[in-house]
Image 1 (cartoon, protein in one colour):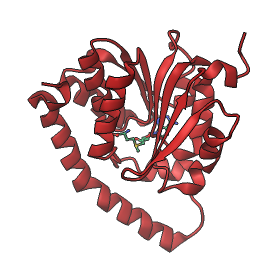
Image 2: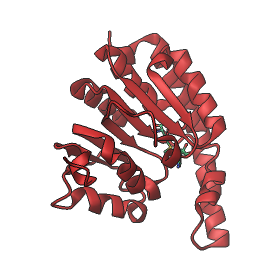
Image 3: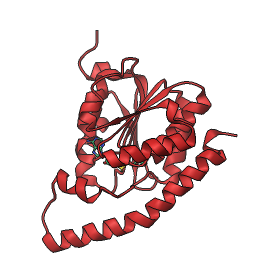
Image 4: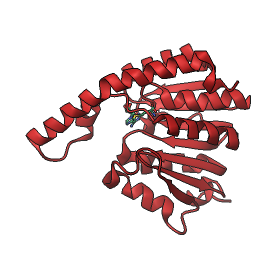
Length: 232
Ligand SMILES: C[S@@+](CC[C@H](N)C(=O)[O-])C[C@H]1O[C@@H](n2cnc3c(N)ncnc32)[C@H](O)[C@@H]1O
């Protein structure tokens, strides 16, 4: 049986998805009402505060795709930007367990969510594969990735998908996969990122995947060093 289907993992995933269904609609209704009432664009701080309680997990199909990609690519190191309560991390770590190798570095800004994600990973029995770093990805991902990164999931605030990718780029190994979530729901925020990975000379082969809120799957054949201007 694959790790994703064990009772220990399915029990935890079912519970977090149920909690998300109970919590997220009310949080988003409140935000929409607030935006209609006050109007105007909102700051990153506003979103961080308002979305404090929101789970915003990857959809179950997206989770399964993450599991499949991880099994097929057999990464030694995966980096996840935006962990929330741990749903995508559980899918990625389940695949690492079944590969018999590899580790996951994930990062979450909100300390309460990070603590809950840690607890959830412990309950699945996958915590030993995961290094969960609390704080801003632009700081937490600056170190401790020495073996090079084989796979990246971008699922934090959309405005910094591109800076986070550029931060990781010098560490991308040849054949790295980069998956960006929510590409159709926040088109303005993700446009700079999409333009970058789709550019002809980008070093990425990139395709949109019409699952749930849209994904962009990018393949970095030569590794990130060439793109980062660091090639020998
Ligand atoms: C869409 S949710 C992630 C959902 C998660 N991948 C899952 O499937 O369960 C986005 C998360 O990114 C976190 N986040 C936003 N900006 C961040 C940053 N700069 N560094 C680390 N985490 C960040 C938010 O606090 C939020 O919990």
